[in-house]
Image (tube, rainbow, N blue to C red; front, side):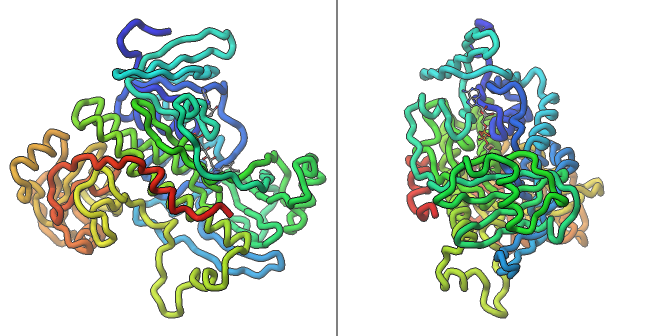
Length: 533
Ligand SMILES: Cc1cc2nc3c(=O)[nH]c(=O)nc-3n(C[C@H](O)[C@H](O)[C@H](O)COP(=O)(O)OP(=O)(O)OC[C@H]3O[C@@H](n4cnc5c(N)ncnc54)[C@H](O)[C@@H]3O)c2cc1C
């Protein structure tokens, strides 16, 4: 029911899948009043996404949600490529993360993960109102706000809600995107895949290793899901159709070809889907933003589809908070697309390339390039690299040798009272300036300090474990990881954003950045994408 007030909420969230739910959590955390609309009465029961990584877990850590999630996740220790005749082409063991104490990769069981995330929303009762069984049927905006029309699917009654901003988290076939007249560019690969989910009855060798069965004809994804579930994804051949895999007997023929038998697993559910390499041509129209699958769709090979939506939500969460509280200008919100589109395009390119490996479409040179020359130091695969920005709300160059735009690592540290904890626990929700052995305020001009003070920034001096502490704002870098990281970039002070990216450093100046607005960021970022294989 509309209350007759000018605004019923600051933000309307359309769709409560993983992206909308993450947006609701992030906004709730910042105390931003929001209303979320979801047409389904309950959690979608089919597991789709299979994995989350250390950087996504760091987002959840910022809400204190990671420890609840860990109880329903299983660590993934490695991935490998094998052929049907049992030859292991290559294996990649995941190195320890630098972003905190979570491993690089977890297997999930999506319905359970969403259940745990939804349970946390109880903390935001009175801040975020979630309406189930309610479909959004209209989105209209003017200079001041957005009017969202929703329909109760049981009673057929319509309601109108007025919000300052709206987030379209309504999935790949987003009606909001259509209503805004935004085109989805890119392509859909014609081949259909069948996804088979099973419940494990007994252990088999290497069940826990994410396995890609590389084959030109029938490449397969074989992955342990959390809580005793397992997933296989098979492509249909050109002469096959969905009708050929309608019964369990027909599905077993596929599993049997990998040596999987009914004493190992029981088939739980199956579904068909096609791979998309698509993106919305723009991710913001006025006061409405597109997030998650509504903005971008990628093949599943890199396990980044859902996670990209979660990161979209966390990118916008703190920005909406700053803008709604009047601390940063509305143009900050334009940096959402500028920051997220290049990263999502990079993940999409990685997913396409991983698909080509699995389908054995690489040339010999490309294959050789996958393994570093003997003796060469192993290079961190781009998929595992900590997130970085190519522009947006940062000051100065984001070149590889610059700290600006990089994510700060998260080692164990101690506070000035001697308490040991992870870095983020000391950074909190807001902005922090960290100085290597120096109080950051000593390096700021009065104007710079005025700017950071207005944003509520805190200032901390990073000291080594052998140093003598001298103030309440000390952070003791127990293993030296922070100091090594800062010195590696030649910086004494970094200014951190709430999402742990470096916004500025003393190399390029420490003034509060101005939003770097790039028109057509999504179009530019995706222009260089390889064709979908
Ligand atoms: C087989 C498969 C495997 C995958 N594996 C991975 C993986 O390993 N890792 C990964 O990160 N991703 C993976 N993905 C992708 C991942 O599942 C999606 O990217 C993710 O679900 C997108 O989340 P979303 O919230 O943006 O959209 P959705 O999950 O589609 O959620 C949209 C929500 O909006 C609701 N909605 C839509 N329209 C309206 C409306 N008008 N009013 C109200 N509600 C509405 C829908 O009911 C739905 O709940 C996989 C996908 C598939 C199909």
